[in-house]
Length: 174
Length: 178
Image: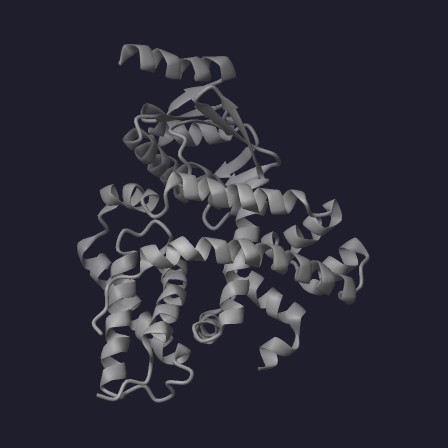
């Protein structure tokens, strides 16, 4: 009942839950509450949609024919728990596009979670008869991609046109 | 047989439980539905055995059951390892492309209708995790104004959420014994 007395506090709690900033006890308490509270459940769903939309705005999406080019609007980190990584995953794994280029020029850091997620995206896109290509990684990120040999699975390009045309060439080969 | 929870209540709990499970095992977990099903099965069993202490507020009880099922699932995964090959395909099958795009369009449209300042306020609170006090100070607004922004956003996105719930509820529900 106290939770519903203060709307701002309630929304702050929902935001903290979605951002995974609550400790285990607080998570349990909030979940026990929303499992029995239609209003909080709906607000949680609404906030999740809002977050997904705001996250998508971090990523600029261009369609060039049947190729989708994703580019971060601001400096981004593809690391464990990062919102940038979540936005990227959502845009690749939950969408219908199968030929995707990710421009990594604004990605400052990538860790094992980010690298794993790139591999997951590649697997997903190949299943849709497409592929993932990476464009303009910074030196630091490129080193990581080469060290982990991901560059052997996900093609790296330094020119946008070359990356786009690589899909065409693959299509002709088929 | 004395049944505390009606079918409609169980349906409603199942939809909420799906969200909880998704939060804990991730949206791409191929066994998400199985975890939900197992938790619901245990709840129904407890319901039939008249073991739910507060059926008028079963959230805590169901939350506890679900935590146990998730813990058991994680233990099993650590023993057997995840079936990684299966992950993306099952995840993408969750919703049809058209449906996902429809939701995305509705969300983007709602966001485009927001004032630029309101959009930055919501970003601060929901994406960057700033406290209401920090958001108010940063944008030089009162708590009352923040309350209005939150109320407007909530109304818009709730409407979209309720639309998405209709097909999701159909997908998520399996046949239950009468």
